[in-house]
Length: 217
Image 1 (spheres, rainbow, N blue to C red):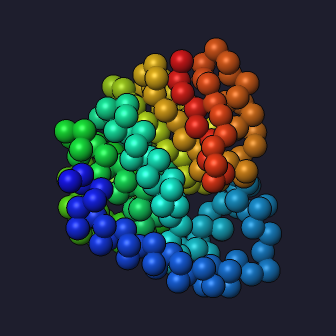
Image 2 (image 1 turned 135 degrees about the vertical axis):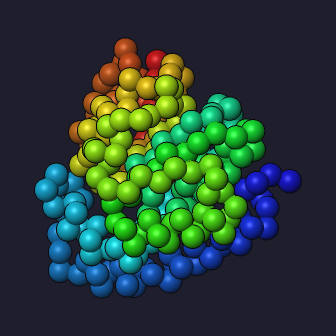
């Protein structure tokens, strides 16, 4: 049995995905009358958008979560970094894979205090909190220091306008072969185009479900 299929993890993930499904109407109401695309892609308004959704779960899909687990296992990763934790769904997939790799650490970031509290409880319930370091606050500050010597996997799933800035902060720690995954890639075309154009630094391709995956050369 893998950690991902353990009763503790399955129970927490099933609950979180059910909560996400049930919150779709509330999410629509929270952003009604706003220009969602403009807020998500703005370097000055993204906090407004996520503030409206601070009580709403924003998880990756089950398929993306399973892909994260597979990639971490396949690369035998020991150090993963996540930008944008929300309620901790993707963090659970990353940490479960590290557990099955024999251990490691997920460094994850979130600036909404209420989401940090809920994610911590979810990770504790799943039995994975010991593998996770949560950094609360502005990722451009929390990720500016004290990073592992090398990073194996990076998941970008926070404010889309900051994807390039976050990558710049951690890029020097990416080992050759390290993977960078950007969720909701349709909202960060400039970042995606830059990654695809950096032929000497990355190989980058789009995947199903609005996900971009790049490998550090």
